[in-house]
Amino acid sequence: MANVEELKKKISELEAKLAAAQGNSGPVRQKIDVMSSEVVDSNPYSRLMALKRMGIVDNYEKIRELSVAIVGVGGVGSVTAEMLTRCGIGKLILFDYDKVELANMNRLFFQPHQAGLSKVDAAAGTLQSINPDVAIDAYNYNITTVDNFQKFCDTISTGSLTGGPVDLVLSCVDNFEARMAINTACNELNQRWFESGVSENAVSGHIQFIIPGETACFACAPPLVVASKIDEKTLKKEGVCAASLPTTMGIVAGFLVQNTLKYLLNFGNVSHYLGYSALTDFFPTMSLKPNPQCDDSYCRRRQTEFKAKPVVELATEVKEDDTPIHADNEWGISLVDENSPEEETSNLKLAEGVEVAYSIPVDNNTPETSSGGAVAASELSLEELMQQMKSM
Amino acid sequence: MVDEGTRKTLSSIPLLKTKAGPRDKELWPTRLKEEYQALIKYVQNNKEADNDWFRLESDKTGTKWFGKCWYVHNLLKYEFDLEFDIPVTYPTTAPELALPSLDGKTAKMYRGGKICLTDHFKPLWARNVPKFGIAHAMALGLGPWLAVEVPELIERGVVKYQEKSDEAK
Ligand SMILES: [Zn+2]
Picture 1 (cartoon, chains in turn red, orange):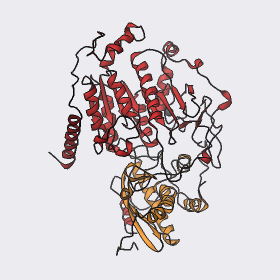
Picture 2 (tube, helix red, strand yellow):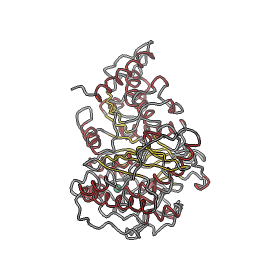
Picture 3 (cartoon, each protein chain N blue to C red):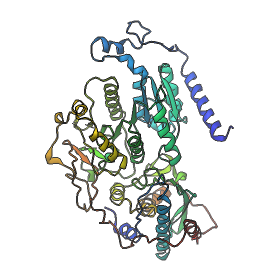
Picture 4 (cartoon, each protein chain N blue to C red):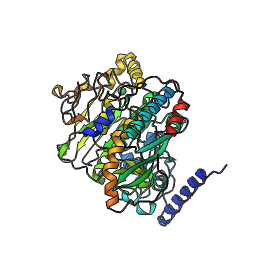
């Protein structure tokens, strides 16, 4: 059954192919069955396989068996996808519901001739031509709606090359709602993921590794921000929503993929949180424990499961002592706040230079507003209320 | 700071009680009833204050909302279609209100015509989960947005007055 939606999808796929064909009259990179370290001018993997010879990575070829989902293929996500493609990742699954616009050309990756295409189809075309060995699935929908969220959960839990859960989810979205949706999905599915972000003023960014139950999830604390040393009150937000710089986005994508590679190929230390302040070239790092009172019930369930694990495993995985923890900068210090109520006391310990964006009161009985009273249980049914609203 | 007027408007909208999102099959209908009750009260308040400025309705599931909002400038009424989805993470995260007809016409918008909220919105929303609902998002988000952006859009000539016979009365 070919409905309009399916035909539209077909058209955009064909447009992507056409665009790819037009910009592609030169040599075509052929598929390669086995990664080799042979140094010849046609082998794109020789310098990567050299990591093995140099003793940095034990088994680089393993990357071909691994699957990564990237949510958000904008300024950070597209560059992330390109890096992983060039590294020879086994499979990429891309999610985005946006189109390429000429207004995006201050960022990396997309090109003017792709304007109007869906970001995922345009990206899949380019990535496939860079490296045809990578399996690429593209999904053009908004993951935060009820129907799509279920599809999203199903895809990341069965999307790997072997039909199991993906090895890692990378959040490269630009809004709080989508981050919370990814957090909800990953806590429920017990899926490890990296959160990444660039501030709306374009001069700071961060990545955060979230292992459900073991490190703080995205809902464990209010959003964290790297102090920009700009007085927020002097920041002009009249007339614009957000600024963006290809540099900051490229740096954050680089951090994200570097830590992804370290995690997937098991070398070096994976940062649990790495911040970046562009104005001062300051890079705070820290580990964050989950909040036992986290609002997300699955986060609390994962914490209980993690605590029940044998201690031996714990000792090899967590290295809390290496991280700079400043007891004098606990939760609640240096807040941007209006008539702040009581601060929550928790075990959240932030590195110097990292703050929570706002505070949330412990006591939920101190409402901001109350003279309107609370809604009383209505005698009317939902249908009657809908009808009443409609006839107003 | 949220201005005094907005604060007053907010305080006269009933607070919601049920913390449930659209994936919560059991409690969502209860939450939805509370949403409608708060919205009905808010529209009544607006009418009484001679400041009626929007209508909203939802599909049966209560996850897709659509309607109209309007703004009076120099005695002329400018009307806009309004739409939004209830995200799976609602009410922890607020709905993203969108005016699709203004997409690309102002920098104070994200893709798809989603309005850009002030820095006060998110902290205030986060502190009032689950007591704030759609009516509060309208009062705290869209109301102030229209008041700032519409006169500017009219001045720039991006939004033009269109003769319309139907008055929302
Ligand atoms: Zn949590």
